[in-house]
Image 1 (cartoon, helix red, strand yellow):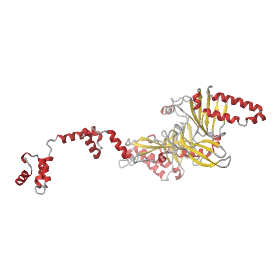
Image 2 (tube, one colour):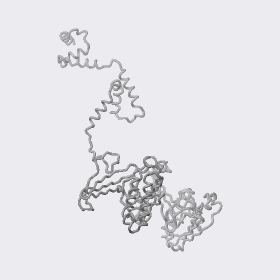
Image 3 (cartoon, rainbow, N blue to C red):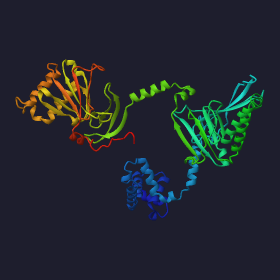
Image 4 (tube, rainbow, N blue to C red):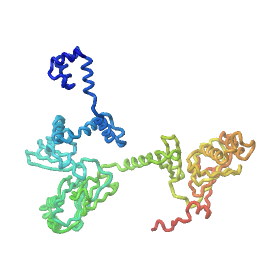
Amino acid sequence: MASFKYQAAVMMENFEKSSPMDILQLIHKYSLTDAYPNTAIAICIFLTLPVTVATCERSFSKLKIIKNYLRSTMGQERLSCLAVVSIEHEVANALDFDDVISDFASKKARKKFLHSEIMSLFPDLSDAFEGPQEIESLCMQCYKNGVTKLLLTKIPFFKEVIISSFKCEHCGFSNNEVQPGSAIQPKGVRYTVTINDKKMMNRQVVKQASAMFRIEELDFEGPAFTSQGALTTIEGLFENAIAGLQQQQQLRMIQDPDLAKKIDEVINKLNEYKTGDIPFTLIVEDISGNSFVENPYAPDADPFVKIEYFKRSKEHNEQLGLNQENEDAQDDEKEEFEVLEFQTNCSSCNGPAPTRMKQLDIPHFKQVIIMATTCDACGKKTNEVRAGGAIEELGTRITFRMTDPSDLNRDVLTSESCTVSFPHLEMEFRLSSSGGKFTTLEGLLYNVLEHLGTISPFSFGDSAAKTNKVNDLVETIHKVIEGKEFITIVLDDPVGNSYLQNIYAPDPDPEIKIEKYERTQDQNDQYGLSDMKTENYINS
């Protein structure tokens, strides 16, 4: 150390008054690190020691503000960046955000997309586009090639349309047409427009070939499938109708002057209404559902237009080339196999569980609704069957006498109000706690066994007496399930929504006896039927 002091005093003036930083710079200037390594390390450690812990404490205080309980999942990288911005807030406040945004935008400018790549197949009319597509096609007048221009576009608040325009330079023939770009709609549409202003005559109208228009005050109608589809205005509908009536009018004057005179009267009336000075009602009805009348108030409702949707008739489907029988069959098949699903709570763990519901027709009985719930959390599964029809006017009592082990495979539907009894055993059970069941006769007997274990648990196991009535019943039911014994079963349902399969249907089953009976007043009160007012319900 003395050697270093002597050498340093020779190399620099005022060595005694020099700071540690000056001494460290001297060591690096003359490459004395190898000669005095410990001295260099000691000076570096001294220079890095904080004079106060205020800076560290300030950093921890900032961390408490930045990473609070609302930001408990913040990553380390984001936390470090926010901490730097917060600690160096003076530098952050001095930043010019316009320069930062410009710098960021210039770096992202290399990502360019061609307009043809991002433009959809059916752009909006308000969008910029390069122009319609031009296709060379045959002219049906001179049989030379002309040009067809196609524009696939979307009309705001309506749907896709295809606008086509053809022109032949050889013979001068031109034609234009509008076709729907989407499929035929499920229902037809009817627009009823009240015209009471000249400006309303300028409303745009998409009239398909399958659409007809009618003027109520003139009792004038332009039938469907008599002209091509067109993108026009309400005034244009009048002009097209007038142009159609004027065709071959001179020939009519010669062949049928009276008819030609009446047509002239209609043309004059149309010209009067075309100006918009006379209020009238316009109806545009399209069985394909693809026509449209402009709504200048969109997206709000138009106070002068009434829109109605209607179901097409068989004749309408034939005009559109639709096979009604196939559609009905597909709809029926879809409804037959449709299973509805909705969320409920599990009765065991109260967690969310999906419940599936399906409507089913039981032959020679009625419609029923089958519901099944499966809980993924606890694994509990429940199912229930309910009658889909109304409560019957009379109660039903079904008495069935078993004669063969195959009778155990018969389908059985028991509602919540059904009572199962065994006359020979003098036992009766009410299975309402388990809800409606759609099972077999064998499954019904197993349900009875489960019910017995619920109402009389001490009749089973080691604590049960050797002989009791419940044990005798259980033993008998097991023999019936094994096919060793046959019994008589009675299903008594006051609301008439229980069922036992008739294997001889539609002929009567010789082993099944079905009785209808009047419910008692207590039963009507129990099921809430006494307070129901059903008189003259249909007439009202």
